[in-house]
Length: 177
Image (cartoon, rainbow, N blue to C red):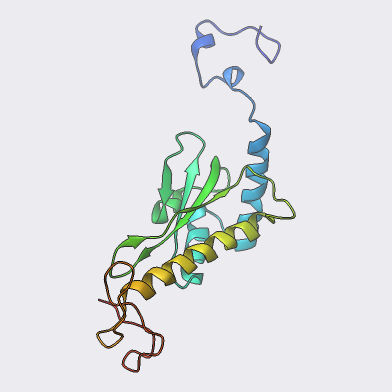
């Protein structure tokens, strides 16, 4: 007898897509869906691509946004996000950036959708923007360590000229190489 109170049709007991062979979502997926709803409402988004676009355009370093799906856990990034709407089984958001001119990645910041916010961590909106801020800070550090002009005359962490905030030639902004 199936979970709906009737017998399985012949051969259906082995059909993984039959509704009576589906398991209920665990409670953390309710939390993930509620957090996703908050994000979609906050950004006025119809899909994850629109959230990516808003974060990319709103950040100084052009953050890269990815989502990890319940099915396989492999991250989906950037323009591929437009295929995924609110009902996609997303359990985390990955935020990172690549610094222009040196191709050094920032550390990926992970924002879990399956966790309820606490007073310390804040709700999903606060946690998302905190992750973006951490990536922006690291990207700025990498930029400052690698994009000094010839007149900056400071060696950075990776052996390149670091940005000298007092440089008169680039006015402390560095240069793209």
